[in-house]
Structure formats: structure tokens, C-alpha cells
Image 1 (cartoon, rainbow, N blue to C red):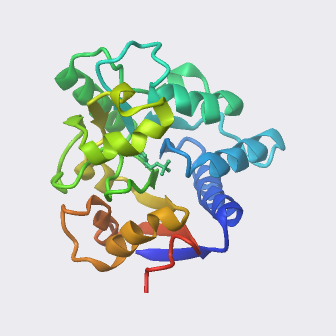
Image 2: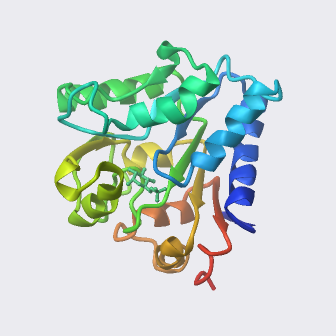
Image 3: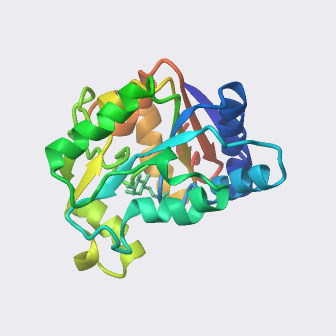
Length: 241
Ligand code: GLP
């Protein structure tokens, strides 16, 4: 595991974008996973800037969604794939058939299998950029998720429902189940990058870096993955030691 310290949020955004751009340059047909949430918005802006200036070409890149709320309508405003499309994929000009998203109305077992099938058919995920949940979750792999878990439907913990309420106006608006790539699926990605920003994440980042590797803090998976980078700003690294 490599740790990269960024001075502030803008620096974090530039540095994490640099990793994604290097991947796309090295392999133009990369299969990428990018997270939702607020943390990656600056990274997304950097990627769009690079594509618009001609410094990067995403023409052959494909994307798989990391996680998605279940049991909501396909055009529900809470859909995480809509967030990703709005913030990144549409501005990047990514074709619809290059974006593999969970269908929130699909049959859970079949849907999880379909996404695993897409990943296998494309020869695996080259790079996954992940955010850090306040309880250490990766995607929606909540504490207790086995390190060899596959893509599946999960129930969200009250803590995750609380932390996601801010996006949707209230806890009652947050769906209680979601799809997520499994920790085993994430562990098989050729490279994984964890982007962490702000004092609010300092406690859980310190646990990720210093606690025993265990399913109690899913993000400790980064400590055993053979090609992992944690990139965090100074505020998030405040308690890292
Ligand atoms: C949600 C998402 C995660 C994301 C996390 C952190 O729980 N399902 O994929 O990483 O939020 O979000 P933020 O970056 O806004 O703190």
C-alpha cells in the first residue's frame, strides 16, 4: 500500500486525476470503476478538463458502477448511476454502451451476476477509485462484509443511511438496500485507489491505516491488495500517525 499525502482538496483532486489519466494513457481500453459521493467531484472536474483540452482520450474507456440503490424506479433522482452520468460520464462524452450500471428494478441475483459477467468478459477491472464510507465501507460493503464477497444486494446500516441522508433530504428518503461490487470483486481489480478528504474522515482513515486488517473496517482491504494507493489530504491524515 502506497500513501500519497495531498496538501488540500484541490491537490487531492489533481493527484488522483493524474493516476486515472496515466491508466487511460497506458491502456486506452481500460475498464474503470469510479465512486459517487462528494469526494470525487474535484477529480471528475480534472478528468473533464483533461478530456476537453485534448490531453486525454476516453473514447475507448468503459465504466462499471461501484454501487447503486435497489428497489427504486429507473428514473429515480436518487440513482447513483445518474449522479455519475451527470457529474462525469455525460461531460466526458461516454457512450451509453460503455457504461455498465446496475438496474435498480432488476432481479437481484441475476443483476449481480450480470455485472460480474460484464467484468469478466472485459478481462477484469483495471483501476477502481473508491471513496471511504464514514464506517469504513467500500462501495456499500458494510462492516462485516467478507473479504471474498462477490457483487450482491446488501442492506444498508443505519449509519450509512444517516450519512447518505444529506444527499437526499432525509433518512426516510434513503433506500434501505443497495447493490455493490463485492470486496472480493474489488480485490481482483488490478489497481485500487482510495480517495479521502477532510477532517470528518480522519478517524476512520486512521483506523483503515492502523487497525488490524479485518472485516470490521472493510477499507483495511487496501492493506492486503497487491497494488493499492491511499491518497488523502492533510486534514484527513490528521490522526494517521
Ligand atoms: C456513499 C457511497 C460510497 C462513497 C461514500 C463516501 O456511501 N456509496 O461509494 O464512497 O458514500 O462519500 P463521500 O465522498 O461523499 O464522503
